[in-house]
View: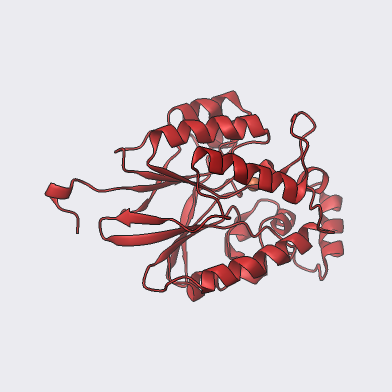
Length: 286
Ligand SMILES: [Fe+2]
Ligand SMILES: [Fe+2]
């Protein structure tokens, strides 16, 4: 319980899919402020494509929030032709991790930080587990069939051209390796502290059921993480990528899709400009 003598305590906020190559979204980032200097911020991927943009955003946020926790999105991992940094795959990811460390931002490669909530400590675990084409559209038994369906409908994620898995032979092989090492780390965590799992993609498939193009789900996660929210004492799951901000519950666990999304998307929702921050903890009644 928080008390007046201790003040309101720290709030854990989250955001994702800031996509700051859009000027309107860069303005949203400029408007992201904590409520108190003790507040933490989770950034669940897709800040942008250019390393300089990612650095600009994270630097600004670390100057405002007591702690910033980052998990990579697919856009950060693109090797975009206009980025002076042309690193690919794991080398690009490691470069971004070092950039974060230089700014004091927590990454999936660091010890999971403990958020000092007024109601008790909570572990914040930024994850990077990727996708493996296992969220296939109905009737597609293999990755090849799923991809063929996507090409037929014209809904092909740009990752196919820009997100390189080097030195892994494929994005799904990179995903398999990430799942194995992440699972091991989570299993080794002290169970007396609950965990907020943060991943760019939803850890379960159900959130993708409402996608306008079901073929897109194959780029949105992996069935290998389907029970993580029940296996690892989970206070909440934070994700983005779908650009469908909402709150759902699976097996009694709260899943928060916290994306800002593209200007055309938030305008379609009727938002003049989205506030950009979602309160994760303490949990707010909705
Ligand atoms: Fe996104
Ligand atoms: Fe994404």
